[in-house]
Amino acid sequence: MTAATSLEPRTLGTLRYHVGGSGEPLLLLHGLGGSTGNWAELLPALVERFRVVAVDWPGHAGSGRLPQGAGTTDFAAAAAGVLEAERLEPALVAGHSFGGQVALRLAHGRPDLVGGLLLVSPAGIKTTTRGARALVVTAAVVRPGRFVAPFRDRYAASGWYRRALFRPWFVSDAGALTPSAAHALLDDVRVHTDTLTAGRAMLADDPRQDLDAITCPVVLVWGARDAQLPLEDAFEYARRLRAKLRLVADCGHLAIVERPHAVLDAIEELARSGSRSG
Image (cartoon, rainbow, N blue to C red; front, side):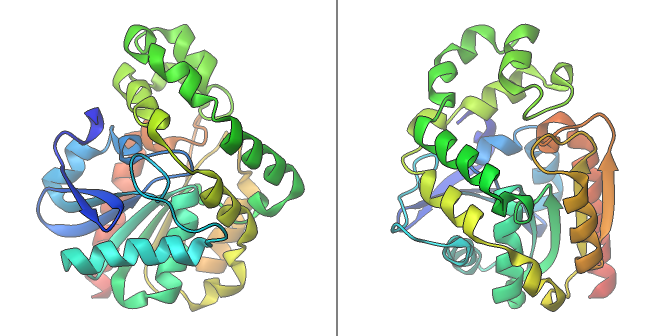
C-alpha cells in the first residue's frame, strides 16, 4: 500500500492494521469502502507527532469479514481490540464518515480507551434515511471503484480523471486533490471482500440517543460543500456533543484528502484539548 509505506503492517486475528511514529497515541478509522490509504495526505505529518495506529475495517483492504448482521458496536469492538493489543489506551481517535460513526460507538462503549474524538463528516444521521439506504447498498454490491482503479497509475495525475471520479459526490474541488491522493483513494478497492456488512451497520445505527454520555473532548470537521452529508447534520452533532465545529470552505466529503491541513490543524487542537483536560 503506497500510503502506508511508512507504517508497519500488523494483524490481530484476521484484522489488518498499521502502526508507525512515536508520541501520543492516535487511532485512525477510515470510511466505508476505504482503507488506511485514505489518510495518505496526513500520514507523513502525523507520524512525526503521534504513535499512529490505522485500522483497515473488516471486509476492507485485506481484513477478514465480520458475520452478517454485525453492527457498529462490532466494528467498534474490533478497533478496541487493536488499542488493547498495542497497549495504547487512552488514545485520540480520528474517524471519517463511517469511521466517525464507529468512533462515537467506541467512545460511548469504551470511554476508558478514548481520550478525544476528531470526527470528519461522521455518518449516523441522514445515513438512516431510505434514500441513503438504497445508494449505499447499491454501491456496496456494484463496487464501481474496482472498475476504475486499474487505470489509476496512468491517469491519477490527470485533472479530468480526478474530476470524473470524485466530483461532486466526494469532493468539491477536484483540483485540490494531489495525484498521490487520488491514487491512494483507489489503492485497495479491488481487494475489498465485504463492504456491504459495514454499509448495513452504518445505515442501521443512529447514535444520537447516546451522545450525551460522551464526555471526552470532541472536534468536528465538515466540508461546507459536502454532497453526501448536509450541514444540518454537522450542527446537530456539534450541539449534542457540545463540540467545536470547523467548517471548511469549498470542501466536500473527503476533507482528509481535499483539505488535509485543516484536518491536521483540528487534530492538533484536539491533542491540546486532551492535554488540558488531563
